[in-house]
Image (tube, rainbow, N blue to C red; front, side):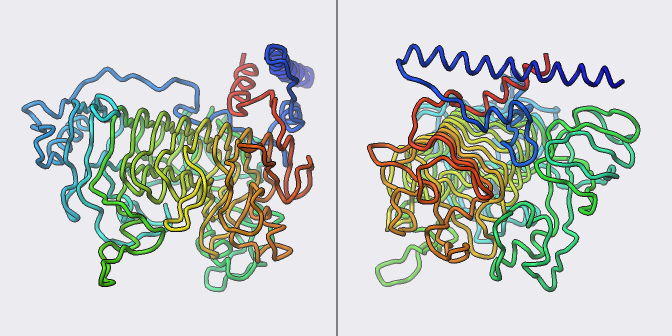
Length: 590
């Protein structure tokens, strides 16, 4: 046994060395072609050697549809054509098509899945505030148009959602959240059943778990693992009596006022993950490594995930009758001062896509035009959003991810100005935002829009932002849910905009900033970076000749707060950390 174990470890070490040399060699080859040297980050070398253990780089290799192991499928059928006489949708006639399209969606669901096909043209949906909206509640339903261009398939949302309560994403059933009434909502079942519980602690980077019983578990099964904070007293929140949030925000010092972060809202957090295999009657192996120390005192319990699977939205264009003149968190007044549109309507009630309790799905080749809320993904996992574009009038948010894990967003282009082009919140982890671009820059003082990466509180941790152009870190969120972010978020190979003005603090060269610097250790803008504890900043630079700084410096450094490598330095040998980790994963499995 011992010799076999040693041999296995040797093989793994050799595989790691091979992929490292491969990356280094290919980088050297490209450097020779480009006539300049390339550099390999030390944090990558440490990851290759030791994996996502201790405080090293997280593992993002299994983000996306089917954990990145399969390409997005081209589902051939069965096809349910909404324009067929059976359903009766008629594009371009100016009449409400919601019922006809919904009938095709329901028929596909009853058949066990299929392609709901919308031929090119404009389809009117949700024509009035209290009218029905499109909803997919069954697995393997594909909503497919005939292209996302102006001459393709348009879903036209004619009215906003009803003025119901807006809550923190994922804290209530989706049906009780006003934002779920979008042009199309994907709504998985939220019922769950306890299947097993941990019997031993596992630490960050580990996958093997001792559990009470494996009889109701199987390989490939998505499950929800819940962790309860043993110290939080919901009736008397105390910043010194918190366990999970303290681990996931360390070394940030929680202070009074951040009462949701150490209160009842943070008393229970969850992780959606698949089971890789059943080892024996009392042991399983997870498909992804633990992202924090999962102590037995957190009472980790394993529940069934019963949401929808295999739902796709593709080749579509979403437009609306939203008239514009957006103002962040402000109503739109008439000349006499009366309110024409409430702040809530402007911020939240004009949405394109909502996903809740969905797994192994995708959005591709989609345009969102003239909507204030783009794509929301809540309590979902292993999802790919790619080749999307936000166009037209200014609005609130582009892609928002909350309480979700393993979401891959790539090739997103932002032409319309947003307050929050990309937002992570509510314990989101393991998500990858890659190869995206803001096509505008500068903070707009009138509507509040900006070219920003947004963390919105309740400590989203271990997420990757890479190969971005025109982004910098300018988050939001009310004080009760701060710090903005949790531990070990990674900012890799990002080109910041020439203008970085958000939360003006005479720090126009600072990549990471916050309005809530009074809660940091110095109480000044000098320590704004503390809202992003244990973050990795690798290969950041800026458009134009101005430098970009982190914590007021351009020097490489590693301390309790951050790891910084290669600020304002070109030639990063690994442009995509996600792809490099994918190659390493494949190499190790061969």
